[in-house]
Length: 327
Image (cartoon, rainbow, N blue to C red; front, side, top):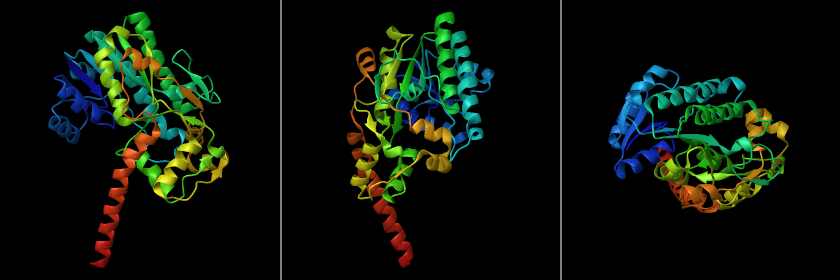
């Protein structure tokens, strides 16, 4: 098959592209510059220039493709954010999705795969939920775009016969994610606090497993169009348990708890509201329908795999600093 990917050079895309190429598929990656052109070509994919916010550019980019995968996002680069920092991501999420759906319908693609997030379930006090649970009504502004994104896809499935599935990802973590490595650095210095005692349940998924869910959707999604899938590991974890586990593993000080109003001052209220969402997601449907198999079934296996390499990189960095100091 010929498979188009928006977000082909992100954390997930960089795992998915080589896998699909190795499986014999022709992979087309949406590209905006020569650097991403080169990465795609180096990994056996075809770069095509375009922009999610410019529909006409997507017609040629997706031409002759059988599958369209939408993984793209434009997240703020800094930790402390305000509403204005999310404007571009919101446009990318809503307008970009509408544009990609329109060109997919025009091309008559066999399958459209849309990334979403489990954060849409909101604050449910640790309740177990499956995909039949609707998105919460009281979501912070930065998540409302994802609600609209899912509505666009569902409406197109219902009214336009778009052959689509939605993958709701848990919090994706990996050794090449700036969010993950920044968390390690803060925890190692005792600077990553617990918010409101850390009793919120988080749903995590290692990036390799998240990418494998997309591969599984390419393989087995066609008979399951119209469905939504939770893509998260087997063991939702409390914020406190995760941070304390990482602190012990890194030999770091035990984390302290701070009230939410202090956290909101430091990193923004909408981000903190997301961190305080507490729900436990059931991933059974993705395993059964898509035949998705987890390599890292819990945060322990996944983070232990990352920390081995993270410690080595930290040791290498200290050795370089020591050498430069001596010189």
